[in-house]
Length: 415
Image (cartoon, rainbow, N blue to C red; front, side, top):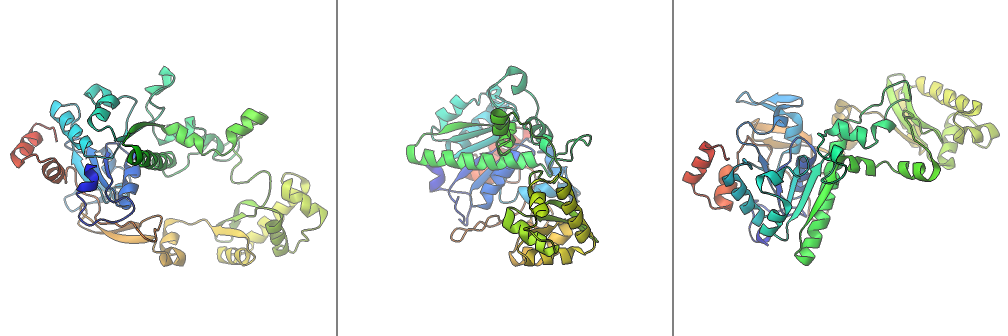
């Protein structure tokens, strides 16, 4: 395949080296999937609209660049290692340029309402006719097919969490309102589904030469991770509801307030529960405490919870975390950004690293490569770049469009 013979990436690295991905999604889910692939060595060509590019460039906790441009913190984190171009798909020239890129690509990821690209003459049949081995992943809120009242609806992280069932399980019980999981949890879940599914289809294409189309509905990605929620409903008639942080069927499994902050204590199974009892100077074999473990709303269960909360409240976070972990009981302070940045384990594992960001013109620090590969590790070879930064490289070097033609395309708003 073309991507195996030539690449824009000068220094090959990672398990995905030689894989070329076209990325035409916006906001979070699809670009994050492409960015994760780029961290692992894939050549990712991300395409934005000509002119100002994506609104998401400037949206969240922006940092001022030397030219006065606002660059979102999330853009800096998620758009490193990519080639950034611009293209107007609605023009004849734009359509032709995109199909030329398709000829040289392995994967195309996009996010939009169902069949958006059809109106530009870039329907799946046309694209696959150009490159029969291409893997296409369409991300949409409600899927490419289904009930007509839903397929064309707009969707964002918030709506996907609601429609997919996550929000009904997150937060405290009524009368408190449901809560969303942050930051952009539905989008990041969808990104992971996008990446694993495209790579699965890519493996199939490598074996058979046959490409295919993936229909990834954002709400379904959210719905899939609800564990046994729907089995419990279909088989037992149980409608799970919000229960806050408490497990409901065993304890301790909750958040607890110490003198100077909050901790999580999680004990799974009778053996770990017995260790908690011993920390509290309770006899784990006494009938009332045996009952308290599973019957959390019984008088015994309520008494145990009160004893534990009082014990934790009398101590500092560091004391609680040390005592419980020394006793082999799951316990952690609830970390904020400053605490994570200063934590010795984060530092020992090199979780936060610096890289050069082209928009800011200086090094930035954020989350490095996750996970860590022993033989083909990922790396960060450059940071985020301005709108259309790689137009000349991609359209000139890869497609062979001469400089004069590129200038004309730019003047006409095609790129």
